[in-house]
Length: 160
Image (cartoon, rainbow, N blue to C red; front, side, top):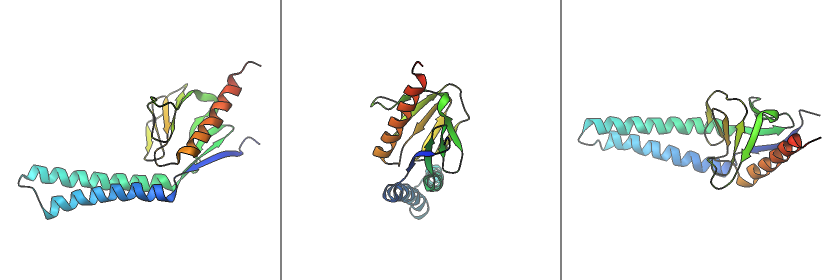
């Protein structure tokens, strides 16, 4: 069966809670600092308030993104909502080394064609021909997903 899910990766609730708590605390602290103890200069007060609201917005994006997960099938890497991140036949390379420009606890995919820019904080991002998977997700789970993907790529590229 081609649509069989080989592996699913989700953010665990402790990692999700910790990341959300850090971002929400920072955003709340900055907004409170701007309102309750305003600096003498109004420009700094506006900056603190705006940056605090931006961080709170990022916390909300992280909350929404980490509700979902990622699924690997024989055909594609996709979100649990059904959005396809990358088809397996489009993947040119998989990078997961220490010096790879990738999210923490994750891996990087280089694709044959560029896609639209997209960012799901704590889960994955796409920038041109690169897709980074990782962030708040568990390192052993993403490592296992990367191993399966590497085997699929190797099998696909092997001479018949």
